[in-house]
Image 1: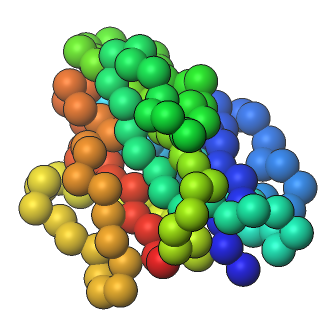
Image 2: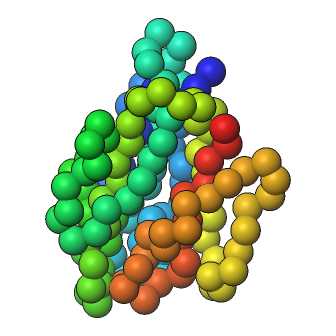
Length: 135
């Protein structure tokens, strides 16, 4: 099954029934709010085909839904607000997600995973945080 839902969970917010929480803090090392991606796999809904990130309050690209949680929320030194956006446009459905945390920016996910090169801790001085996807 493919991804059909994407959310950002804040601190003690429970994982919705039937969803999977990726248990890696999106503000790792940045001393911000504890934030986590969660996703849903539901064969009865249209799949998510792409996820992108926008900075500093920019609108979502046309055809994308913006999740209204700043991924740098609560970090004392962040210089950018980062928001996740997803679409269900025609394309290859995303099968799974993961988050990679690293002390170096050159980290790459194992094949066949791909990753978005946007560091989700941009300007927040934490670990490098990347969203990885399996198509």
